[in-house]
Length: 138
Image 1 (cartoon, helix red, strand yellow):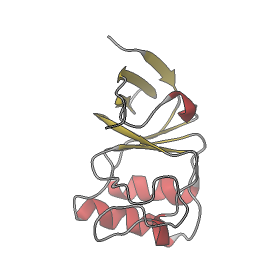
Image 2 (image 1 turned 45 degrees about the vertical axis):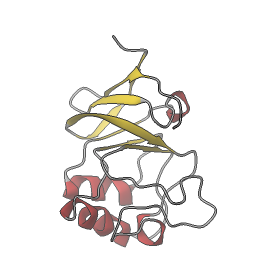
Image 3 (image 1 turned 90 degrees about the vertical axis):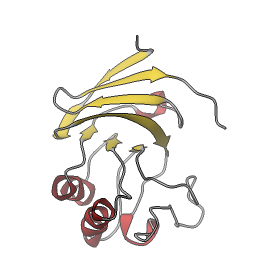
Image 4 (image 1 turned 180 degrees about the vertical axis):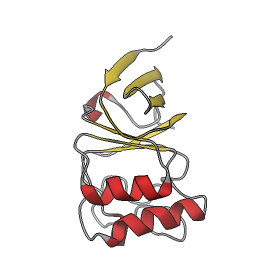
């Protein structure tokens, strides 16, 4: 049973179920995420200090250098990448990173409907995102 079903646009096909990590701020993978440990290091970011590893990473869109695509790929090679990415509006840097890293990605989703720690199923073959369980922050 799911609590909520959202329909978006497929960017990179794939499927996963994992805990959501949600930000209402854009993320820059170059300079905003530590490629050595997968933690958000951008000062004043609402996810500062949080690890993106194995999460469904939800944020409005990316920003910053095109090298951010490679950082996302490098995170995958070190097993530090998110399980999936959900954006409101995909941008080329994050989309290319998700493509080369083979991370399922969907956009055109209202990320305000998803809360950090929710259990989320991402079906990036159909563009469907389901919130399966709501959890309170630990």
